[in-house]
Length: 340
Ligand code: NAI
Image: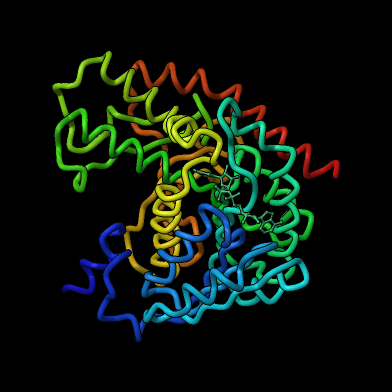
């Protein structure tokens, strides 16, 4: 049916109003950091999503304007803006999915880890709010460094007694979006049909695209081209940071990626079968407690974490090389959450 096919294809369903919008269950989505560079276009894309019935836009500043603006769009959801700490509870109450793009972005010359000191505290405070006001929500963390902010969130939730490992996600979708685009360009195949799993984490060499598992397989690509595609995927964020020359990092492509991932979470909650995306989650795939790989999303959040599948020798080396950095970023987050 038209409805099923719309629901199954994640990127196309986003911009279409499905016939089923009135019968889809009520779902509240909260965006924390909604007035920012990512937050604003993400608010727009979530307003276009027919699976959302209530859109809650929270920031420390600027949300009345963003909410008034977005609320005039004639789609299903009711939009409310909330500003300041004292309104965080109302912003979160009843949320099914909470998306967090709050915090400072990179400037040229900075690594994602350079953001740690500011963003770690922001994510911690927001997660304390989530534990209190919507402990059962699926939490999508965009704020960098994701390799550390996700472990921080898990520690906050553990302390509050609300941790459910199935409901905490680091959003690595932009790495997949980039890998698909770069691969399609090199392999000269239409990007719409391309899929590339990206595993590991979300910073530099911890981002490991698995081009050996890309579909459709392009046998024409040389080893050198695969190495270059891997490096470009790992440095995709830095490419944008440099081009923006001090005005921040990826916002529009990140909003797109964040909207794809939140849509997948909503579809999972609504019982749509076979919803699969890559995400940085609690994991047994490697010896590290968190790792990004393909996951199946369902009514409880993560229903299944997929293993790595077969890797090329180059990907095996990449995996070995990323583990120490990812381990130390995870430990840094856990340590921060437990000392402050
Ligand atoms: P931005 O500076 O344009 O926006 C951040 C927003 O967060 C601002 O509106 C600010 O007022 C708000 N904010 C600050 N403290 C807050 C708090 N305590 N509660 C609620 N809101 C708060 O930054 P941008 O470009 O939107 O980036 C946001 C974050 O997303 C950065 O940490 C960036 O590194 C990260 N990012 C992650 C990506 C990923 O693939 N996961 C890709 C690109 C960026």
